[in-house]
Length: 150
Image (cartoon, helix red, strand yellow):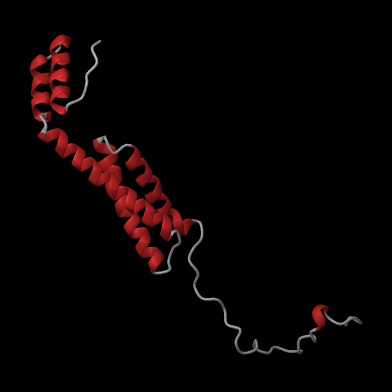
């Protein structure tokens, strides 16, 4: 036995196997760290990529849908306390939805302004580069875009 008192001025613990004093309960389940935020991080990354590439069908629609799905799952897991990263999940979900809506609106706009006519024109033109360029110029005129001559 030591001749010095324990640090902090507290008496030494009583001898024997006594239960802990009342009020000391083990901590409850905590949200997982690291791996528990994986879906939230995935949703955020996919949402950012979807917004950056929303003008492509792959970027806006596919990445946007994936960001929304992963975001919803991650938000539900965070709400139930099984995972962390609720803010990242919400951000990914919102970005994915914005990209999806933007891509669909842009697709509708292009389709309603003669996209099918453009595809038909290019198919008829075949390997004739001058005819293909004329198709591009006509389509850009329909959209109100200034085209560049090569």
